[in-house]
Amino acid sequence: TKSILSPKKQNQFFCINKEEALIKATRKEEVRKERAAHFSQESSINQTRKERKREIRRRPGRAARLVAYKYSVSTRPLLPLSSVITSPDQTRPIPPSAPTSSSNAKTTGGEPGPAAG
Image (cartoon, rainbow, N blue to C red):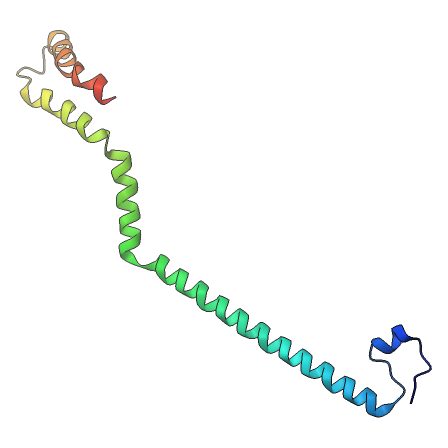
């Protein structure tokens, strides 16, 4: 019943006794199947996690909110500036007289301008 091979080889499922070899082979197969089942279960869990993340990313409200936030951040300082720029144009009486009106608009718009910038 004892194997002639070295103990190291014996550990690697080398066995001269046929019954022992069969037992070891079946055990090896069982372990392999268990591992495969466990791995497939893990991968399926990860797959569902990824799908959930993708769904959250695909939601329209979130994207709109992100875009709105991005643009609100970029345009927040620009909004007062645009109002400053548009108000002298509306109040300015004569656009053709370039040198006086432009300098006048610059001085009136210059007070809030640097504060905004």
